[in-house]
Image (cartoon, rainbow, N blue to C red):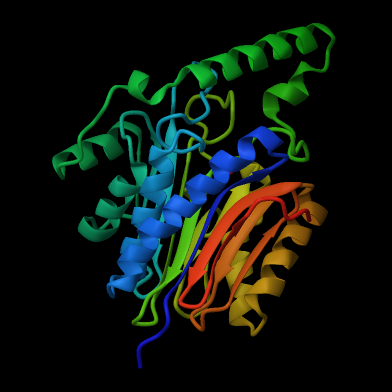
Length: 315
Ligand code: ASP
């Protein structure tokens, strides 16, 4: 029996300032429109999440694709994962520097490789061999992020002199004022299959080669028809220690509702490792949850009955 499709996306969770709200709302709504077109014509959840994430990677508002945060060396280094709940096939890329849309490369890995995960030059070579154009790293860097990195590093230098620079350098899992604009999408298609995708530039001033949670299976992204599809955002190190997307999906497999499970995941993140972030999660019966333990989160969803988006929901 055909299922009514559902699409949910997010564009980060943190103390987003007022003047960034409109751009985030526009971005998540654009992602919904594009992903929904796929679902509406009977396309797969996998295609829908890929297309929705591409829209947000192309939008400089978000920490994904062009416009991402810069690492300590002033370079963009991207991670992404896509996963198919029907087959459990997955494709992930980490630390790529020359791909505008890392989720496209991740999808090629899922569809065309016996492997699940490629990093750095190996990932780029794999993508190029399959027809994905490589770009220069400078094409992914925008002036706003150069400025952001410079002021962060200047602040860091000041604090180092006053002895508390180490905290800033490592990043603090409970500092919600640091931006987390990772993007993600989860979908249910008319055949009853679910899928998830997450894409990120990681954290500001990260060490080169640092990999976050976003592209790790079960941490920043997960999908299994027998449990749920989930995508997270927030400080990656705490999230990956808890394998949070899989943790949440397991709660749903045990019979809990996605709404409750998403909120529990945020409570667990805070209580266990003092982490912060947000999660979207969707089960095969079309129920979904959106939760964050940060002041704001950019999210949007669409079902056959309703399209809604928001940011201002305070936790
Ligand atoms: N989770 C991402 C990371 O740590 C960052 C984010 O969500 O903004 O790489």
